[in-house]
Image (cartoon, rainbow, N blue to C red; front, side, top):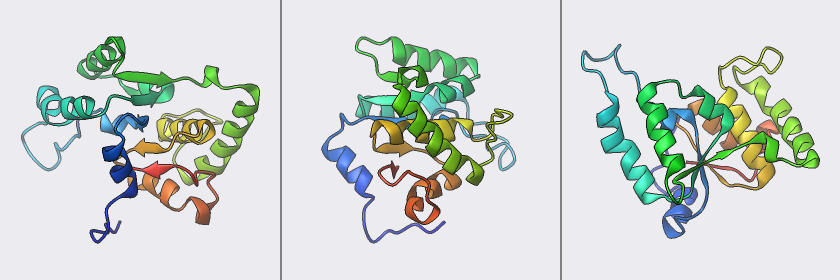
Length: 176
């Protein structure tokens, strides 16, 4: 993947100017990376929380995850941290739930999912875990008119950046 350093990411510029916008996060933003094949030292959760999660949750007050991403968070420390963000008053994290979609929105969401899942490892027929969170999140935010999706996954970012070329239905979504 090429990174263009000649111009800033317009999504980030907009978020820095207006930090109260909703930013939907992928699971890979919340789970410490596994670098065990590269190093003997493990990236433990307390360190990940200190240098990554706490600054994100401090800087941005309107973060969200889709319920499919919430289900991917199986590590007890991650679950505990996320629960604490949800239970804050006011909440520091909200959950996008498909049950909140109108019947019309559900049809549109299904249409978008059908366009993007073949470009991923997710198969709705068997409802496997691979890329389910990304597919469900992207379809939901596209239907709801939410703009920002934060992910560390090259394929997911391409679904957004090549939306027109690949006809994903994600034309109004921006990757962070």
